[in-house]
Figure 1: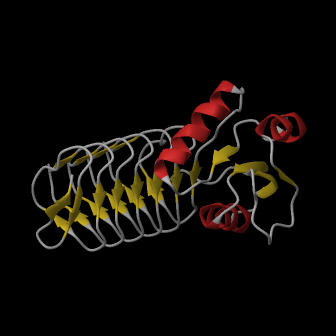
Figure 2: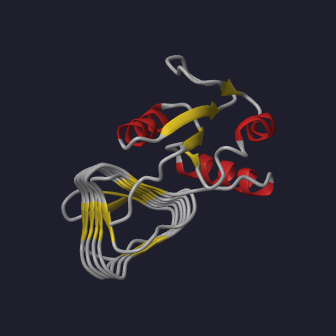
Figure 3: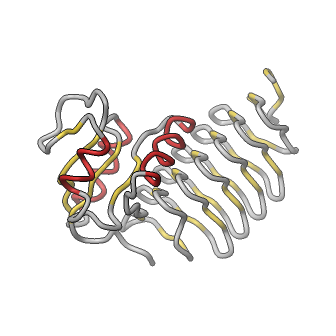
Length: 209
């Protein structure tokens, strides 16, 4: 089982997802030493930098391999990831102590509490596997996708770049979901979904393209 690395962490994103990630780090014995956000929310007891360049200059050395993009919105998370890579940030990954994963996820991916990634599954960079979400064996989750709390992506299914699988939704085995799709909460996806669609219901149906 992979575990949270001890040491100092810097989070790029100060909203609700950032607070969830900070909680995972702190309860595992790590330490968040700074957050970076153009307009950080109140409630942080650590330094908050508006500038990515200044944040890396101040804290990058102590957070080598422990910088995370902690923004919940997929497109914005992808943009910040690219900016951080271009700025030389040493991005890490986060796997909560109560999460299980058979292999390391991609850079700046996050597996939150009680999530599970099965054998042979591939988790690309910038992915969020949220609380109690399940990605079963041989599934593939594309970059900057978000598998919301309690969602299940079953064996061999594929989820495209930037797609959101809503809370409690189920993607059946072998189903292919395209890029930038939104799967509504509690939907059951029984057949392939093209890029850019919104699907809801049981079984899931396309309501927007």
